Length: 114
Length: 116
Image (cartoon, rainbow over the protein chains, first blue to last red):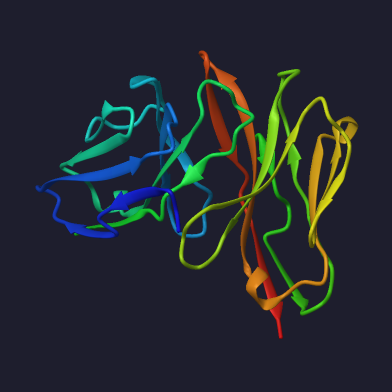
């Protein structure tokens, strides 16, 4: 069983909808990540939070808005998405700030934008 | 420029064969970390192995082994006596510092099919 929990598992939304993806971990990790993965492609980094502060934004469009309300939770707010945003969204966490610790991934949210 | 290259797009082997997955990376850092992850059809990325840039000792863990060569910037991964359950996409990843935080950059992946 994964120690990083993502909800929902599947999400279908229209281009005018507002929705949120949720990620939770209780491993005491202080670095949390959002990745986007299209079919048959590698995960692409979107955002990194370190000690609840946004430390990396990989030039992601503003229709994606991350939030880290506390050390265990990470949200990704979605608004006015495009069909090409349909993908698997993966959350991951690791100990901060070291980079020698592996990322622990959730099962992902499979998003379809209609 | 691609920082982590996995030249093998797809590999098919028959069960019990050994298989090696190649990974070549590019970085300017003197200290960095390399990882292999497995992604089965269910979608979750599972951590397999890790190597620090200052430790070139190669190791074996069960059916997994890895060959890290700094001189050629390669970090290859071998599965011995492959099983059908090993069928998955395997990603090599590089951890690199960026503004005090670490980015984990994934290679393009190699799809492994183990046939019964």
